[in-house]
Image 1: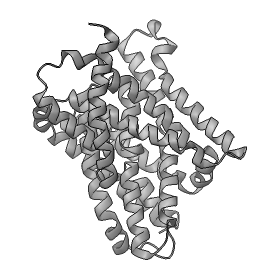
Image 2: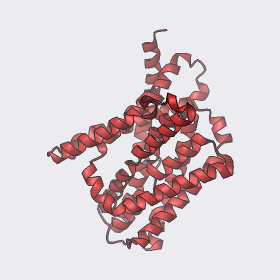
Image 3: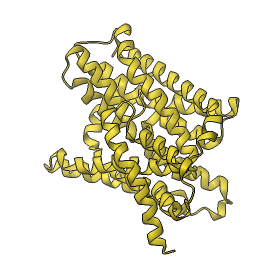
Image 4: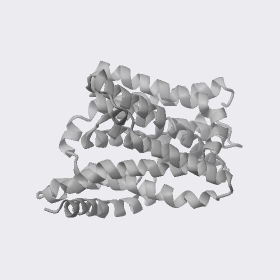
Length: 341
């Protein structure tokens, strides 16, 4: 069979899943398009008997297109705006990321979660949900079932956070006349961008703050996203050193080049914005990035054994819960220490 034709068959199958998932995600942002895409893909996989013709395209979508999505994500990063917000939120971001990764590392040993799922859940919880998992999975060589499992765990606690945190914020006593404190909380304690948006928007609606909380939360979330760079580089280096003798370690194996392109896209956005290019000019790239992640999640769903996912889900859920609780508590503690709460 012509390999090009084989690739396109698989890509078109993923596209047929991604398009309705994209619109479902718009209707229910608290769930999000990537989760719908994985779920639909897993269901279709149960009935896809003759899948050989689709396999190469599915693999291409789950690997290459996923990396392209991460690169395009860089066009949503104006580093000058991130730097301004980062001065205020950076201590909280560093603390929550450090604690989440430490919890994931310790519980991996204590409860016996496999290495790749524990890393994906740790970075997904601490950095930016599905985007961090998308960036990290090719670096550590995670398979599609491990990615699907991590996404499922992150999704579960995203939904709880988006629904619970606005009420929790009111009970704790967040300032209701400004969106700053709750925006920082949502931006550091909620994982995925769609859930951050839902949580912050709810707070704005509760207290009539317009988009003040949402603007703050999204900018803090973008600052968190930058942690993808050092963490993926460190993981790539560790994998290369562990998997081969030191003399065989090459720059190409150590360095995930798509992360370099992500950085270059961020720098280009920052420079062009400083030169007067309006931010709206980069919106198509950001929207395409979101859609390509949904497309890649369709492929991951198609490669996932749903029965195995259910059987092995208990320990990863416990790990995700522990990361989620630790991030929430540390975010609240650090805001109190810094006088924001």
